[in-house]
Every structure is written in C-alpha cells, then in structure tokens.
Image 1 (tube, helix red, strand yellow):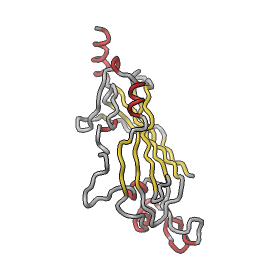
Image 2 (cartoon, one colour):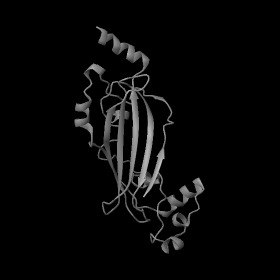
Image 3 (cartoon, one colour):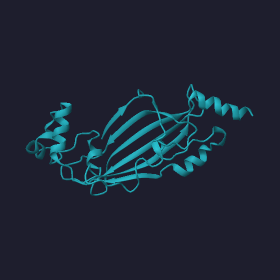
Image 4 (cartoon, rainbow, N blue to C red):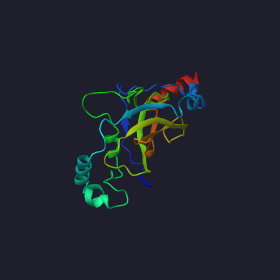
Length: 208
C-alpha cells in the first residue's frame, strides 16, 4: 500500500455565485443533523469509458520524469511481480475512471451538484482546500477497467482564528476495478468559513 499526502498549504479561494453554497446562520446550524443527513451520502459516480492503456501511462511518466520500467516497459513488467505494466500511484487513476472527453456523458450524479460543498449546508461561503490523501491499495494493470464513487466521509465544526463556526468537510473517492475490488482511495478535506462581513452580519442577529 502506498500513501501520498499533501499538507496544509492550500491557496485561499473565494467561492463565487456559480459555486453555489447552502449558507445557514450559525444559530440555526445543527451539526448533528447535518452529520446524520450527509455522512456516507453518495455524491457522484463515474465509469471509465476505456480500459487502462499503456500510452497515457507512458505520457504521464515522461512528463514527470519517471523511468520505472514497471510503468513503461511491457516486457520487463511482464517478468515482474504484477505480470503487466501497472499505473503509477498518482492522480492518473482519475483519468482512467472518468467518462472520457467525448462523447459528453454525465455520471449518475453531477459532480457540481450542490456546489463546492456538494450540498452540505454551512454557515460560511469562503473556503480553502486543506489536505489531500491518497491510499493505493492494489496494483492497477493495463487492461483493467475502473469506476469511482465519491461520498461525504465526515463533517465537523472546528473553530479557526477567524471563525468559531468553521466547517470541515471530508470527501472520500473510492476506485474500483472490474472485479469490484477497491484499488485506491482519495480523501479530500475542505474548510468553509465566514468572511469578516458575514461574521459581523451574523453577530448583529445574535445581539438582537
């Protein structure tokens, strides 16, 4: 099993109207109800349109300077522990589990449904990506077919310096092969908080 993590070093982002956020006043926010309604909810699915192919793997490895023959040389890989070229542990799995660029086709549920919070109600509308973690559980070989499922894994209220009602949303994307074995998991944590103007506006109601 491989694990690839990125620390807290995300770029601050303001979510505009096209990234709809279901905003709730902190006094009306019931985190227990939110957790009951949202944790483990299926948000999106995608079925890879094409099987895993060597050429995209080769292009990826050339781009990042990876010369591992397990990813590039079918003859050497065939004699190796996996019996075929495998996909390097990377975000390349999302490419093979996607519907492909053409012809256009939506997954069972649109990825953008509910905006950046996937519909989870939150008090704020400012956000940043806090952490990405990959767990690579099984080898993915050339010829495999992949699909993915994205679910809400966790929702918590955890105060930050600027906002005591900051909400942390963790999603988990599971990747399955043609045998329905989970070959990888991708966990992503998003922090949503209020702007100073929102905090002042909310405090006015609290004081009234």
